[in-house]
Length: 341
Image (cartoon, one colour):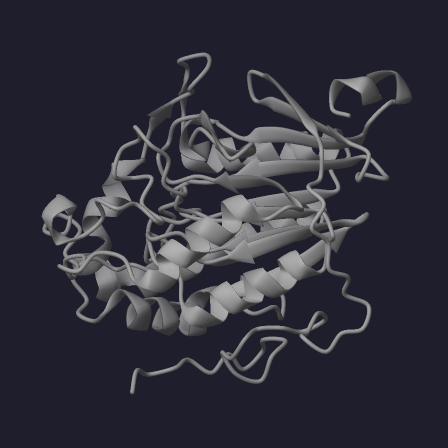
């Protein structure tokens, strides 16, 4: 039997389904087969979603791939595992201006924008850290406390990875969530959680191993059955035709033969058999969800938008180079109703 991590401070008692407020017996959950209709506009890093199912304006600042490398004496015993990534983003060039910057400055700038623009929510969607440094995690927690805006955190593949420490991806993720990252989840389940903001439900699902487990799939399907407008937050982008292997969740080419980085990242190679059926089922469930407004992710360090079955997936530029998304969910004005009905 695989080792299961007991999340002492999580909202659920065990890894289980991770269903806290919304369960299969919740009478308040309503089933809906009606697709939510919406329009999306994009201008540089500003996105606007318009829908009659959005009752109040919601602004989020979406951040991924900051790759903070801050460390202190507590990290000395792990230098043999953190060395490569500790040097990877010491200095960066801003993705717009080309000016010299660094991950700490870029993260603070994104938080300042969130505060100045009175954001309702900050989404931190993976690889905020280049490795699970205690100093960096504490620094982020302090900055988030200062800005005092609700936030959601979900791990990326680097957040819990010390390169060269042996173990399966799942076991290493469990270990470093428990030992380092757990406070960032604010009592929520680290692998799957729902956060509701003004009638929109944000689903944070950890796919940082590139795969989805059966509990996460069941959790997602239960959320879909509620009929509430949903936004999915995952670190690894969902597969889309024509995209690289980095769009690796549900990618039919994902597996040992396409894993070019396992040696440099000093980790186990992706499985010969590729994705589990559950991961493919999750991909299908995501883009078939009638109440899904969109998928937001990171990982590839480059802005992109894909549309599958009318459902947009938006990937942000890396925050290490100053990137973040200004995302607004807005009620649809009566004059625009004819555009989608």
